[in-house]
Length: 210
Length: 210
DNA sequence: TGACACGGTATACAGCGTATATCTATGGTC
DNA sequence: GACCATAGATATACGCTGTATACCGTGTCA
Image (cartoon, rainbow over all chains, first blue to last red; front, side, top):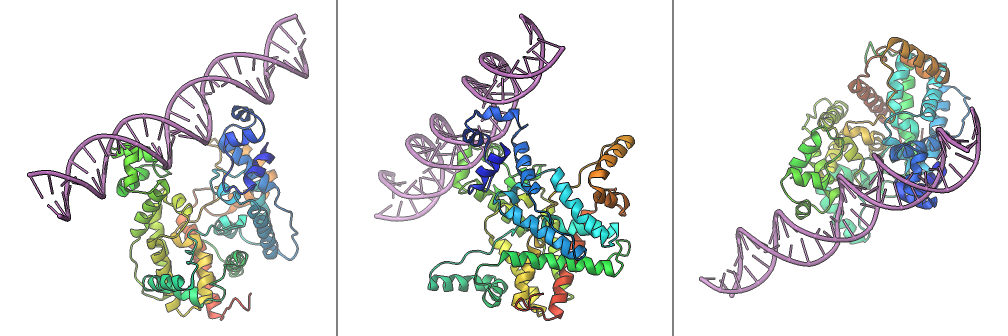
């Protein structure tokens, strides 16, 4: 039943199926589902667990940093395969067993790398959503009109109000094309891992701040 | 009317009011609202804009890095004052004028600091949700039972399954107390700003990767 | 044989967003 | 002053949601 729910959602839906739709797809009355799941929230909980359990195991070779990087990219691959999953994950209220297992896996690598519990703590906070392989683009950059002259006109109006946005959009490499979200994700992830490594090597402690 | 909607939501609600509830609170029929707003989505759009417009102006003194940091913390202060705002922001489909203005403000500081358009582009991606002053804690760490012996028992079971999580929770400074989310936010923010500054000084370019 | 739990059903309720049609009061124009 | 368009409120209704409650048939076990 959870499997069917995941299938249903995967078929293009950005949201988990309603109880009625799932019931119909199972050839069953809506209320029958309540014998298997407490309520709709619990259904979504189960769907998320199903996805998180499928995160591929990754090797621990090469030290904590590449190991954590690989693991997070594996989580990303799994979660992005389900278009509804990121939103569903964001709306969970508590960590489930597979979620805790994933966090524990990462933290274990950090401890094995010799990081202090203090730094592990802050590192996990810093990674927070990114450790699941996604970062919500809160506001996607507005799409430009199709035609060449409409595009120019829109840019002109835009440019006076938001000159720096336009400057970036018109001069950064590839910025006019679709953004490579995998590359952007890796960039930010490496930024964070870099910083964590640097804090670790510098003997960082939250007592000393900075 | 937008003001009333924001008020209503602020009164403890984690979600924007329904059309019916807002109408009732205004002493008016639900359908009357549709003369002022296209639909419920547009209502939430307006509420978000109202909040974003209230982000305090901050000074540009001291170079791009402290300026950006101050600005982001100002956004954080404003947005966290409205418990419903982070979720509402995450569900918007397009950037509104005040959202674009905020992004433009930050990018302007980056350009003034001499960063390449390439790096500005990636930096904005890396900051993505953080530039609004929040980071969703996707899975809050589970709450522990109240009593001392229940707490110990829970920890014991937990420890065998998730040893590294427990290790962190029991040995990191302050980890047993409530996390200081402001400090965690600043930690991650500084990690990112650090990395961006470092890339900038090192003449980073996306062609060269790294 | 009886008890009981499990899984499915039928019905109903309260809430949601909103399409449609209708009424009313206001302000501008001839 | 008469007319009319328009803005804003209304009333009603539709289809959707989650789910409380009550009921029923089937299998297992004492």
